[in-house]
Image (cartoon, one colour):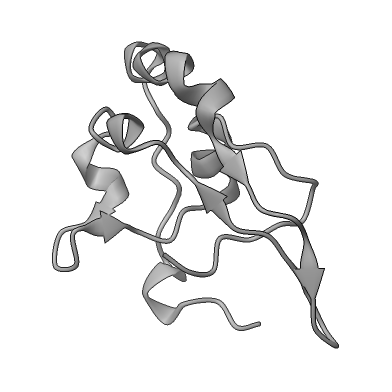
Length: 92
């Protein structure tokens, strides 16, 4: 899987403690699909609660699409998403 060329020179945007605290109430409501795979990768869909999306800072979103941007591991972990090491956010 190739890295999105728009991300190559960018760095993760870390959440402030106050931003992280606003998201804590939603962590137990994050939905994880069963894992599935193809010949190369293992996949899993993660669905965030709609009310949680309203609390995520605006710069975590792609303004042109109105969806979350592709997040760095540090960013999605800060939101409370838990995955094994090595997982990458590849689709929104």
